[in-house]
Length: 416
Image (spheres, rainbow, N blue to C red):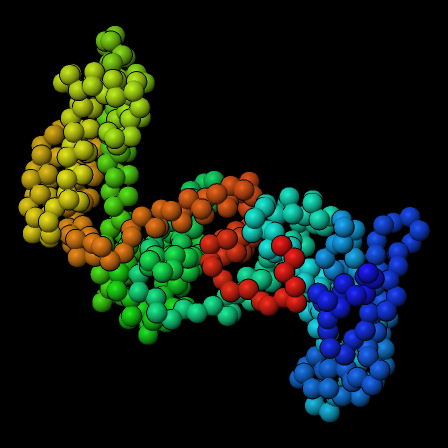
């Protein structure tokens, strides 16, 4: 079977013919495929897309195609110029490439698909290309997907901030967290009200009015923007963030008490106790369960903080908003009288937003609030796989490519 027959099966283009196939030179193992226009065919104007008579022919250019048996493959073609009635003299458009790109669309699709499975550096090394070429291919696919994605019917959003680089630099991320669709909708710089305003501006007032649920943490700029831009949506606090703040409070109490016991020369009861206090009881392994049982026999500030944290878990099992409000009243009273400043700080923060907590019961069984953290884990893995992106643009493209569930352009053949 000839190479021309394979190309006509997987990469056939109307109006063009594959001719001679050979090596680029005697030493390099690079295949070159000469392409010519079919006899009698007219070139297509790159400006308006209309066909017209040829004007002249430019020098031959090389377009890189998908490797064959590990060998680079290039198309050789001399572009024609068109005498267009509307646009004047224009270079023709060819179906296997776009603009002045030196890669064929099939090869760009091929690299971008592999870049979603491996790191960009690995893809570049394995297919003997550069990181910049892989980046351009992924960017091309992401731009096409963003231009063709469907944003209708969005009902539930998850808002969060994610650490991006050193120096307390963050990204604002917005997810769609419905049962039938969980994807990244938008990513912006910093965790400010201005960043979130840009998302709602892009979403538009009509789609914003159709939102039913918004799940976020208690970051004040987010609360203000949501109240202004989506007042009809039911805004609730993410259960994970409540547990995270309580765990941080317990850990601060433990660290302070352990340091105080060390200064006074007391027995280090809290040594190796961090994770047995932060884990859920059902997730403790044997030694951790024994350590926790030993700690609970002592009257320590850390134990009181731990019991308050575990006590709050009963809030999520209340029958409804009325039972939840009654539980919160009692829990606030106990937490504020505990004389544990980290726990009191969390209690005051939660007491300032009772509606967001009680909305959890109104939205129960209608959306999965844990989807935001699940997508955040995949987001962090994407950033970690690149060992840190130096520019926001590169991070944005990688995140949309991995988490955006974007539509992909059609390709003449699926290579992977």
